[in-house]
Image (cartoon, rainbow, N blue to C red):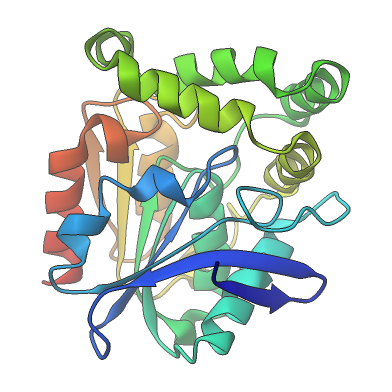
Length: 259
């Protein structure tokens, strides 16, 4: 399996598509591995090379001692790009992946062409809620948390319509390493870039989900208001809008990246 070293971590990735084409990096949410972007790859590969990776602590990447920080996870992306000799890429991140995208847009804008921030916020939740989740996972493992998270990730209508997708997603969450999950919970808990968003000067698209309880539309509108020139769209979805509203999501990012 393709692996790149980032400090003490080994980052698992997949790079697909025609060599020489522009590269689009997908960055996953907390508790997910890079398979969450399966609905996007066939469409994106028509015009782009697609780089997906498992965040540190997730999937087949290493679980180094935590807690982690968004800066550290952003550094993993830069190490991955350096190792693959990719100087300038598009970046699409959802939830925690969106926070990583914001950090890159603020701190390494020269590496990004365009930035897509999906179902995310400059600050997500409160320290109290994150600390409670960390404690729950340390005490009881991933299984009890996974069922509650899936309910927040998808709207009731979609859960009823797509039981196989829900089952597969819950299994992915349950198989996430608890130590890696807790370490990334701390990264999300401690990140707050609300006063730095105006430093993002690259073209940005913000995608929110109308029914998203984790990062509600108000969070997305705040991002779009603070990032100069950012576009905002809202999909009829909960938190994983790339899965729940796959076709429109794909059309919107394609139109943005190729405009």
